[in-house]
Length: 421
Ligand SMILES: Cc1ncc(COP(=O)(O)O)c(C=O)c1O
Image (cartoon, rainbow, N blue to C red):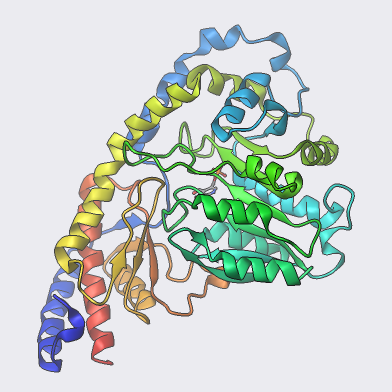
């Protein structure tokens, strides 16, 4: 059914029916949550054998029990290097959070500059934020008072015509956030052309950096993974070797918040980072790094682990997408959604002006969703239409309830809007 072709009378009748449906749902006193991209218990269970490796762990090199090796243990440097397609020397293995490494990198650059350059905070700076994007990236910038410039995402990645124009002319633009594979929240993977253009573009700021958050590098939802062009290699070929910091972690491979994270960068950048990091910590947790190495073993083994995770979470994505298809169909005129091949999110675009109302209705009906506006800088979606759905954490039965509520709330909000109520 195309909502836009309904008469006023049809819309009014339909709204009355959906409001009755909504009141019945509210009376059920549900309490469900699809707000954050967290793994569910069944996914975390998959990593539990890692905790049975005590005997093997005891045989770790003696030096791993002690301070030292700021850059991380060679085994994990090697494994991350293989995952990201870089050399082990380009990898620093950190603590349990890649977001922490991103935060530290921005703070370090603000205070000390990049590779001996002027501190970023010696004058006001800006960052490019592809939208919709990851709310915590934007939160870091807001926390430091860094101005955010929104650039729209396309099916191929950020709108590169606009990105190139901005960075070429404005020296105060020091960076861009990118979630290049199975992007949070749109699920798209950057095309080769976008990666090449990011590596080659002229930047007015010589200390411009790409923050390449490859959080979902192995997080497949199909047997035919997207292939992301290697940004480090592209930067080397473009003569801009120092342009990129790449991040990833095992948060959604092993345990969220208790995994191992890394930053990968050129030799100059690695040297620069370590020269500051040495004041920050003596070394990260090498026992955890080794335990992860024992469990993860190899890129092929990680792919096997991620297949098991896919079996757990793919049906959850199917539940949400199936319900949207069933209730709205392709040619509904008022909402569209993504069907990602990997990652953790579905992006649902409602009719303009409806997203906050959907959130409000969901809240009253006992469903917590990511606040409307969250995937945008300063929490403001000018069109008030984009919602981020995170289906992984909730149990299958709760997810069915969540989707029933969500569908009803979208219908009520859209019908109200079309009737200008
Ligand atoms: C794009 C992106 N980057 C980073 C993170 C957090 O990663 P970590 O647990 O390594 O800090 C998330 C978590 O949802 C994410 O979606």
